[in-house]
Image (tube, rainbow, N blue to C red; front, side, top):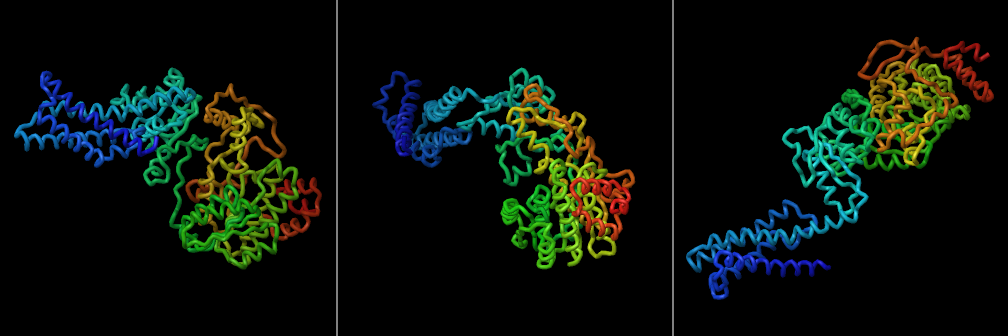
Length: 605
């Protein structure tokens, strides 16, 4: 039906209702009255007919989409009808010097009943039809019966193609218990969630309390996830209020939401002094950590952000993102270059003369580097040497290298090369105007090398989830937290420090797998866990510091400083001259001995 035909239908229907309402009211009060001979009645019908259509047009009763009718539409109906009745009252005073109050009251009630019923019956009919057609809806529990929760339910009920059926609310407010909102009952309190989920066969939980503190949200999320039902959340209240996200943008709960780590508080003034209106170069800018450093650096409005990376596609993506994110005062410069290309790196440093360098480019995959030790050496050692020496030569103010906890007592090539890279940084820091530092931290959730994407892919395929060993333990941190602490560590760098980030408590990988299974809405008996054995180069437990590196100097909240002994320049030069002449086995043996602090000269010989 066209819009014009639909409006004509409503006009005709309203005309009949208007006339019927007035005649019906007279007949109810004066059943023996000959209504066709009553002058006042005829004039009243004509007046209410004209007045109704005028006020119906005035309040948009023919322009509204009644499929989504709610309180606002009902208010428009009441106004239009009320003003129509007032018009009749004025006519009766003028013509008859009297007002038929009872007739007009009944007319007002019948008028609203039929006009409102004609509109809302359409929505009711469509809702009933959708419920019959949409039999595969998920039974959904909404945690929070406040403004956000009711908005979520309203959105679900309005959605023509909805796949979620709101079954009930959860709220700790005593006054809301057993009440209904939009026809959905408040079933109990947060403490009752497990039994309510089981009793009502809930298939999805949506947490709709955006004002909760981080710790309160963690406790609530753990209760919901513990039921084995998939759990989702709505955005934070700040994102809703600023318009960044809307309340109906429901998101999956992530594992990092369960970590319980406190929010990082940075020294914004120190960071601003180092970055604002300065030239910042980030190597590995297209990677997980590198790209997040770019995003966070952009907040401080540097003069230039130089995005250096080897992968064309990854640099294209971060360049596109930064051009939308960075201030108009910040120039974004994408550069495709390989850090192993020494002349190219020196050329870039000479052209752009950055003030601060964040060196995030590296090969990081442990088992892969075990099969390709020479590539690990060329990229992680010689690549770092090229970038660091070029930075020192042009007088970069601060150079921060991203290291790893795998550099501590490494049994693998990747860790050994990163430890060697730390030594390079320490050596170059001696008698240098450039403030060099390395920042060491553990696994980063959501990074390209993280186990989380692998587990999620395995769960999506129905399992099994593969874990190397039941005792495998790792430290975890989110990408934004790690990146912000790296930037903060740059303000603390003076003379080749090895900064170590506070990674919190270690997490068993098998427990991580179990949490991800539950977060995906499955029970552990539905998605199996398979132990595959430790891979080449892996350790069961990672460390952040060697025993002789440990010192309790806490230079900033969540940032420690380790005392680590560098190799002397002569030994370093001899090693670098001879390293690539070795075959893979000898190369690995030399690197592991150096990284584990055996005699450097005996290794060279």
